[in-house]
Image (tube, rainbow, N blue to C red; front, side, top):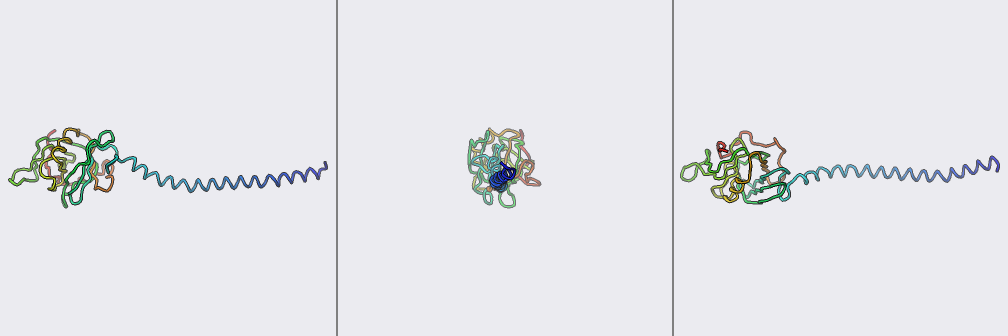
Length: 210
């Protein structure tokens, strides 16, 4: 074959190869474009998934809590849960919290003290005697506690009132250092250290004995 014939054959092969190369290039470019669009969508979905994964099922509180409280409107119709190993073992149960101006603080706390027969140093009963707060479990330095006594229809001065049988259960099963989280009934509260207890008057007064 002549030199010109070889040259013509080479040109023909190049002409055939070029469209294949271009098609592969276009396919690669399209794949990169799809990956670029998909990546932000995956990234935006990640925080939501994290929030769901960090919430104890059946409660509005984050993972790691032992006692969870959702404040009700103006202190009424609140709910509480007791959690062990990431699962609810008691609740939701009825809870009454502080009313306007004496709202139970929102945040993440730890059990500090327990007193089976505590009496309030802040409020009195109808007889003028210190209000009984049986089964008190304190979780703020200002005196906010879970406790029994009184009617659930009566708001507290900042504590969380439970029915006596529920308060007894919390008292028996909460341990010093256990995590308590109070939320506003709409979602997780702040992380550790984001509690809002500064200067709050809890109603329980001084912490009870261990």
